[in-house]
Amino acid sequence: MHAWIRNAWERKGIGGKALWLLLLPASYLYGLVIQIRNSFFSRGWVRASALEKPVISIGNLTVGGTGKTPSCLWLARELSERGFKVGILSRGYPRKETLPLIIGVGTNGLPPLQLREEALAAGDEPAMMARIYNQTVGVGKDRYQTAVELLRKHDVDVFILDDGYQHRRLNRDVDLLLLGHDSNGCMLPSGPFREPRRALRRADYFLLTGEQEKWQALLPEGGKARCFAGSLRGVSLVGFESGRWKEYPLSVLHGSKILAVTGIADPSEFYRVIGEWEGDVVDALPFPDHHSYSSRDWQEISRLARNAEIILATEKDILKLIAFPFARGKLFALRVAMTVENGERLVQCIVEKIRDKTKALRTA
Image (cartoon, rainbow, N blue to C red; front, side, top):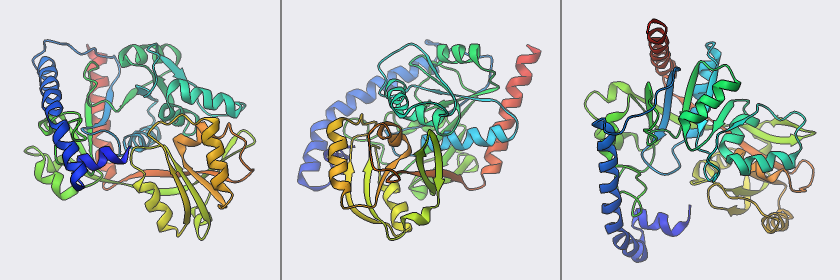
């Protein structure tokens, strides 16, 4: 995310405040359009498509930075451990192609260049979930048609709708809403909110990943009983060797000179984990979210890497970087995972919803 827009959202300095005021009229217009759209769905004037499988939506109210993808992976793992076959549905931003694309599982036998091209074609986050975390992933603008195509090729018991809170054209059985550090409610483009805070009322459960005290004061009646706390933690480092992913302990970071390469909306957690393990960030290259790395970027990274022992990227970035000829054993990704306080209770609530939907479909 560009620093100037973040300064405007946080109203930092004279320039940030001036830009915020300049963008404010557009935010009122955007908010009006969103309210009209939401009313069409809430009144049934626009109907959502329903799948014959349970759908769990994981989303947020703001742009970026709340941990949606790690939360999808956390829930997919928890449901898989309980015997459910999980399919993840994703828009695949910034993918332009509208037709559904089903991404295979794993990386065995796939060359780095093919992995990079797939990440560019499908979107880095869907490719990461499929190729690094071995999830079954369907990518497409129309998530209903994508789910139908995925069911044609794979056996799925439950769908997880990634970044699905605003995708109201697909009916869902559970809405899990992530609430991060931004809580002021200011709408795009003068703030990070994609819809007003009153949309909190649509959620079944809340996962607070930042500003917990502020959000708890804003939750609808009975919301605190459906509220859970989540946080990201560093798990390991990941490298790609001989066509396979290999994990390394985080202790490798200790005292190492690191070039940090990020193409994510908010890299603050990335740097926090490095700091926890006393890594020495000698240089940093922050790129825009979902950045497509070019040969020029590779040359710049290589130049700065001369002063570093490790090039450290995110997992969704490494899929696009492994195609470039970096020195062997120098490029790693930082693996992070979502941890949920009292997560067993949240998973059990979701499992009950899945079983209720499955039972209703069988008796219909």
